[in-house]
Length: 401
Image 1 (tube, rainbow, N blue to C red):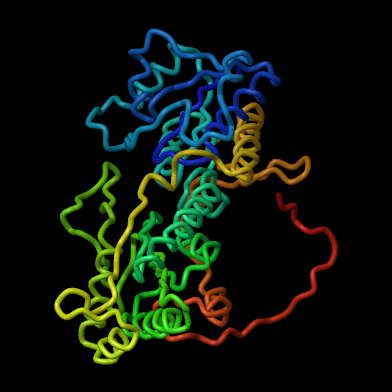
Image 2: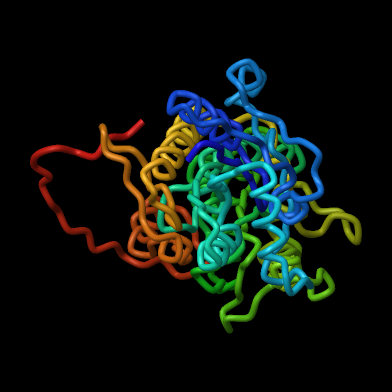
C-alpha cells in the first residue's frame, strides 16, 4: 500500500475535512502518499481522464481546516452500479492503475456505503469512514453532532420571532426515515413537540398538547406573548402510516424519493383544528387578539432551514471523530483489511465492522421516548408511561469525548 485515494461522497456535513486531514496525516506517517479524487464517485469513474491529482502533502494538508464543514475533496451523488457503461468497473480500475492508487478511503453514508460494498465485490480495495448527518448507520457517523447542534441553535432562535408574533412554529429538518436529528435537536432546543418517522402522528393528540401549552403561555404572560415550537423530521407519517410528502418532488440519483412538505402538512392540520375549535375563538377574544376575518386564530408557520444545518462549521466532537476515523481507515488499509467501516478508536484498539452490516438503517430507540414524554415533550401521540429498569455498571466505562 504505497498510494491511497480519498473520496468524500453523498451529502456534505461537518467533520469531513477532519476525515480528509486524518487520512492524509496518518498516511504520511505510514510512508504512504495520499491523493484527492475529487467530486465523489463521479471523479472516481472519470479518474482515467485526469491529467493529475492533488497530493495531500504535509504542506497541502495545512490548508485544510478540520473545524470547517464541507469537504476539500468535493462530492457528487452517483451510484456506480447505475452508470450506463458495461465496462465501468474496468474503467475505474484503469484510472486507479494510471495513478498507482492501491486503495481508497471513502467517507459517506448508507448510499455511499452500498457503493463501497459494490466496489469491494469487484476487487477494489476500500475502507469506509462513516459519514451522515442523519445518524442512522449502525456506527456513529461524522456530521451528526454538527447538524444536531445547528438544528438546536436555529430552533432556539426561531422562538424569538414565534413569541413576538404569537405563532406556532413548525421547523422541518433532514433525516429521511430516521428521526435522530429531529429528536436530539428538538430536545436540545427545548422544543415543545418532536415529530419523527418512527411514530405516526395523531394530529388530535398533537393539537391538544399545542393548544393547552400555547394558550397557557400567552395567558400567563404580562404582555400576552407566547409561542410553541415543533420540530418535524422530513420522513414523517400520519396515523395511517402514509408519508406526508410532496409527490412532485421526484427522486434522487439513488432512487430515493425526495422528501419535502411534512412541515407544511403539519401546519395545515393544526390550522384546520384551530378553525373548528370554538374555544380558540373565546381565547382570542379574551386575550384581546381577535379581529374578525383578519386575525381569528393563531398563525402556524413552517420553516425549513434546509442546507443551513449541514454547512458552516463542524462541532468539536465531529472534528475529533473525523480525524480518528480517517486515520483508522488508513491503518486498516495498510493491514490489508478492506470492505469494512470504521467504528472508532478505543484506546489503542481500531474497531471496525463489515460495511454491509454498518449501513443497515438504525432508528430512534422508542423505549427512550416515554422518558422524554414524562418531562412534557410531545411526540404526536398520547403520552406513554416509561418503565425504566436499573443497572449498576462496574469496571471500565466506554470513553466519551
